[in-house]
Image 1 (cartoon, rainbow, N blue to C red):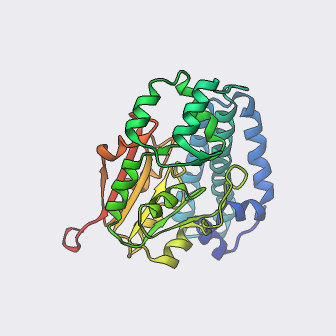
Image 2: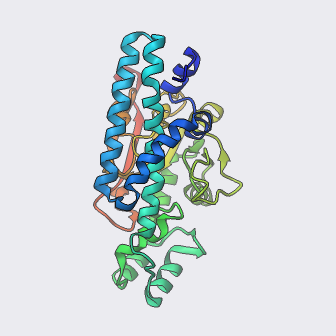
Length: 316
């Protein structure tokens, strides 16, 4: 049995060690998780994947409770901490598997020439470089697209989970109000790029954990969320399509400088976001803004923009 120092255990419990570092430090647990995931790879439907995520999540919660109750007892830590590590591995790797499943869900499916030409002109500047989309133009041309359902699976393998309308970017720029802005888990930095083109002062950061799927441009600074928040002390923070049950959004609510946190994602906790943190945001109020949610593309009743505003001192 591997033994953990008290300091290492505390860092793992506090999610202060990235998944990438854990994967390097504990390869035996990685192999154990990969063996189980390998068994579901050929049957990786959403229900199967979610069942595995739920199982690992439950195991991690039980382990965390036992370790906390024991007061960091060495025997208990060494017995149960591996379950927490494996849960973090599994959720991270299942997210990658979800991308692969989406990308391959249609086999060699491709848009017909008509659909492909319209969508390329409408959504991209060149290649997979997105552009802010005119909402009126999108509404007009979207109704002419025959195979709407295959758009997101096809672009998902490039780390693209939504498109931003010009109207949404304009509204977000107004919300930032000229304050110092930080994007965490920024991926290819598209949102920050659009925001800065609209006149904001936003910095994009990401821990590069999705480098196998995303081409990170030079302006996206390599930094995990906790490090970036401490470095920049931003007043406004943004995150688009945060990983479900992620370990990093909770740090936003613990950062004293943050006055506004903007999340672009979905209403489904199995798809995006740390909803446990959302419902316990400490000194912040939570708002699901329907008007802004309607400006995310493609349109979906599941799209969501959440605004977390710091409460006045007297209302805490």
